Image: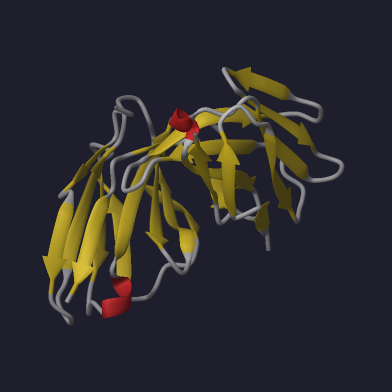
Length: 112
Length: 113
């Protein structure tokens, strides 16, 4: 158990809908990262927050957004969902930007 | 833009054999990570390599880093079935950001008796 908690573990939703994925980082970690893992794209970095502020953006679609709250938990919002958004979404956390990120168990999103 | 390439992408080994997975990256970085992922599971950190010539070993796995060649290797010694998993290398991307990782496509290792 890495100490990073993601909810829900599984999510099935219809195209066009909006979902929110939640991540609680390890105690003491200030950095949160979101990654998308799919068969065709592999592990894609989406976005990073550090102590509540956006620090880096990767291949994140405009339909997706994220935030990190004062208690350091983070949420990834996915809207206008398409079939191609079906993937495993991982959250990772680390003490700072240069330390080892530890990954949560992931949320498996299925869009039907 | 930082790119990370792993090869091979698929590796079928017999128990007891040795093999090496290679990870090349395109721009300078001072951190390289190796992760293991079992099917449908999370990513488990195996090694962090921070400097040129760094070598780390854990059990039957040994990782090394050559920053001049922008190359890391993960060497498997006398493979056993329990090592079957997908192995990812990831390189820290400091281009305008701090610390996010760019992953290779992964090497799916299957160890057969």
